[in-house]
Image (cartoon, rainbow, N blue to C red):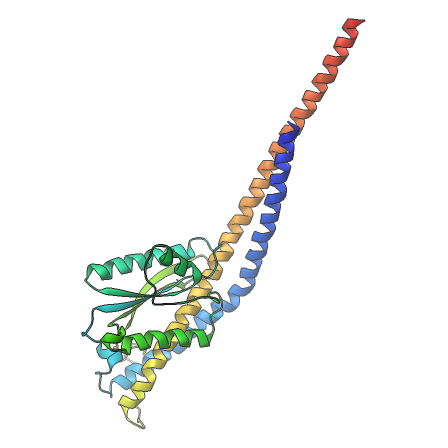
Length: 298
């Protein structure tokens, strides 16, 4: 039984070490979630302003712009999946990957060829393990996206959409990411980003007239500059949303893991005490038996 005590004590020490790691990761995520949440939600106002500006300019411009009109010269489409670089975040990445698989299956069922782009090591390793070709992947900084990285991703995806067919051009861009709603609710989103669907008056309150603009140079040239800016901002906003969702998922997962570690420590302590009591009882029994044997021999 002494061996059982040693085993339980070793398990208690190991679980206590894990508990410290889980607790530290929970506190780190908790300390960063506020900033990430503010950044993710703060981008919405700017994005709405861009949507409003695109709607206003498009009312005076030629809507044959390639980012709006779309293209029918290829059945190749791009899918961009936003996952995490690290684990310990519950089902965060698994949910995004499941939605990405469903999207790819649907697009391929429609006879389209999928070009896959991935952000995050979890997504990259998942698809490479399954033998699916990845056109481009980005790793590091999934929980703290930088504007420069967002611009690089957006320019790569824009370049694929505007590229000729022989250079791998795509006719659509779909983005799969996780939208942050509350600390306990993060919802996977599947959005078609390109071609852009422009609704006249989008972004304004109901019944509110759009402001009048004078364009210098022309409205078409303004739209040429505005649409790529809009796509870059949308990509950055979705990366920020994904980062806030990842941190919230990690904080919740680590809190649960800490609680589970405490329960394990409690269970192992009880089992160790039971084994110790059994050892004491066994020793007392041996002493009494020895004493009885000595008394009988006299």
